[in-house]
Each structure stands twice: as structure tokens, then as C-alpha cells.
Amino acid sequence: MPPQARIAGMTPDKELITAATAWRHEFHRYPELLFDVDRTAARVADLLRSFGCDEVATGIGRSGVVAVIRGGTAPSSRTIGIRADMDALPILEATGLPYASAAHGQMHACGHDGHMAILLGAVRYLAAARAFSGTVVAIFQPAEEGGGGAKVMLEDGLFERFGIEEVYALHNMPGMEVGTFALSGDVMLAASDRFDIKVLGKGGHAARPHETIDPIMIANHVVSALQTIVARSVDPNDPVVLSVTSIHAGEAYNVIPSEVVLKGTARTLSETSRDKVESRVRAIANYVAKAFGAEVELDYRIGYPPTVNHPVQARILGDAAARVVGDAAVQRDMAPIMAAEDFSYMLKARPGAFIFMGNGMTVPLHHPEYDFNDRALPLGIALWVDLVTREQN
Image (cartoon, rainbow, N blue to C red):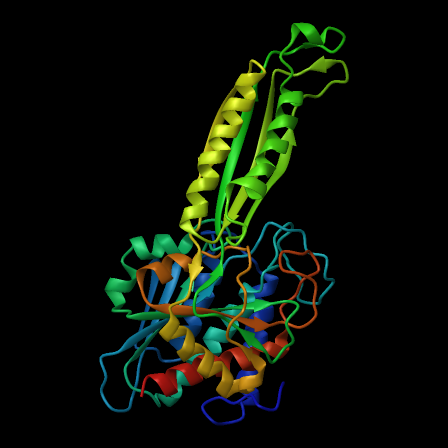
């Protein structure tokens, strides 16, 4: 643990860190997917009740858990929310850890086990000390990994029901040293959209291609043409990533199939580029196919919006991080990355900020050998406690 780490000016309590580590390992051993986090949510709710929270609500946004902690110092009406995500990924774990996943084909490969343990540790400390004014709402969210759980919680009245005025979240980041944080006062992460393109041709015998409309050949032209969107259709100063990630067609050596299915994703940082990419994908798929006498069926699905920090709240969160690890260990102007996060929905609804916390030089997120770094737990707990005790007074 870096020597600068403090919780509200104190060295983190060893018993609290030991407990948080145990919770993290328990969550890691029993991963659950999307909204089906019944065991995880029940365990989180039981712990929150044992901490003496003023209110613990379950079933928010189908399976989310929310805890309310009211400060014990001078009265204040200010209410902030802090979010941790709960769901795991459909990945076969290959860590060999003693607390490795007990659910075959599922694992916490993105560190949500660590995010939960951090927020639980902060809540336990805050509920015991009450050394702040105002109210803190701890949000344990399901279905970040593609299910849009943040949006579902919002649609269930999360912010209105609990009076949340600002909202914050963190995410661990492999490749950043433990004891460092990074954020910006603007866009942090990309929008993420998905598309399916079905090229409908005319199948036939591979020995008589002139009697077919070969969808494989046409699909290859579509894939190549789609890459011109990034190269020629959008501003090079506004980053875009477009990837075709799946091509499926045919089964036999001597049969030209009648259709090909392409799948892919588009990542953008601005709504202008987002609209342009969708428009160009539709035009290219249709006109390329038509040029060869084929047709297409296109399903373009709008996903998570860009994750955009609010400048004031980014400064507040950056200051809290600096008090924990020192100003030199906090990057406040990081360049955005093209991954996506459904915390973006919360930032569209309320002022707030999202921050990365170093996980060390580990394998990347979503990797079968990934594991959250327990050395980061005290830093995350310290961040949330400092944010609350300094900013809520």
C-alpha cells in the first residue's frame, strides 16, 4: 500500500482492509452475470444492513441494491451517489487462484468484485464514523457488461427516489501503477454501438459460380468499404473505431451459400461522429450489396453513450484522489479511451465524474488470467471516504 494512502487523514484500519479483501475474494469465487446477480446482491444487502445503514433497498432496476447513510455533523441537504458494478463476464477463468470462480464459464474479469469491496469498505467506515454532513447513497448496480443496468436503475427512479444530486464511480485500470489515478474534465470513454449485416445473395454449386450471387465475395467488399468510414468520412481529430468482429457463412467446400452474416461494433466520442458512422454503415452495406445484385438486412443498435465527466465534479474527485496518493500521482487530463461504460447514463442525468484507479502491470481487463489487485483496495476506500468527508462538510 502506498504510504500516502489515508482514510480521512488516518492510516487505513487493517481489520477493515482484511474484511474488504475477504469480501472481494468471496465475490470473485461466486460470479454472476448481468441482472442475474441474486447471490451477490443478497450478500451486499446483508453486509450493508450489518453496517447500520439508515436504509437498504433491494430490487432497484431489477436486482440493484442501494444503501443510504446520513451524516452526523452539521445538517446539510446535499446528497451524493457512489456507484459500484456487480456483474461478471461469460469467460472461463484461467488464474488458478485459490478463490477462482466456482461457476464454470463465468468470472470477474473486469474487477467488479474489487469495486464492490471498495464501496462496501467505505460504507462501513462512513456508517460507523458519521463524520460528514449531508447524505451518501451507495449504488450497487447490476448488468454493466452489456445489459445497461445503470439505465434500468434510472428508469426505476433511482435518482428521484433517493434525492441524488451528484454521482461518482471508479474503475480499476491495468497498465496503471497501483497508487495512481487518472481522469479528465470531459469525455472519458466512447459510445458503443453494434450492428448485424446479413448479405442475401443466391447460393449454388461452387463449380458454377456464374449461376449464383456470391454473398461471401460481396461481404468482403462490404467489410473493406466499411473501413473507409474511419479513413474518409469522419474528422480525424474525432476518434472513431469500427470493427467487424464476426463473419459467418456456409458449411461445405463445394457450396456457395445464400447468405453471410457480419457482426461488428462502432466506437465514437461525439454524437456527430456517432450519427455519421451509422449513416455510412447503412449506405455502404446497401449500395455495395445492390451493386452486385444482392440485398442486405441491417440491424444497427445504439448502445451506451459516451462517458463524459462534468468539469466541477471532475475537479472535486481529482482533488480527493490527490489527497489520497499525492497530486503527482493523479493525471487530470487523460486522453479518452475507446472502451464504453454504462455509468455514462448516470452522468447524462446528473453532474458527476468517473475515475480510473491503477491496478498495476497486470493482464488486461476481460482476460481469462485477469485478477483485481488487492493492493488497490485501501486506495479506493480512502478515495470514497475522503470525497465524502471533505466534500460533504
